[in-house]
Length: 236
Image (cartoon, rainbow, N blue to C red):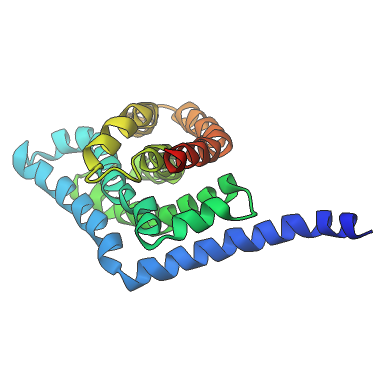
């Protein structure tokens, strides 16, 4: 009887731990708004410098807008990923996560979810403003928003693997970038491809479906990879 009761309670406790860790990371993010606002400011700066560095011509900017917005989002996510596990490493809570009775992949998925809520959602909300600045045609805005909605969580998941591998490396930002960038290439190709097709009036659903498939694959595999990387680094 006790065994069956514990079996029924285990998923509930795991869900409570998942939600509790998200709430904890969101509270910490609001207490240190600089970590959230810096990537957004960087995102705006990258997009606003392109017209000055290349050309202010509307026709040229509208063709480059999708790539500019996506590259800006990619760099901004990379900038924010370094702190994904570093704070827990510094205050000792990473060891508590490793010793927790709850599944470690579930806990790291909670941390990635909190990272996406603080970094990815802000980038998605800023994207229409950048699209207007870069003269993106109106018919491409749905593709822009949907591609970022699918792509930003995927970038958080893929970058989380690099963050887990470099959590105990001092000034590991460059190494994190080198590990994460190859994983971002498919996201960048499908994301910019969807916007490019939308700009010229061609179907872009196929690109979004590929991104959705990659997101499902990332949700299944990335937490396992992050948990394995954290245990390997801890044992080392």
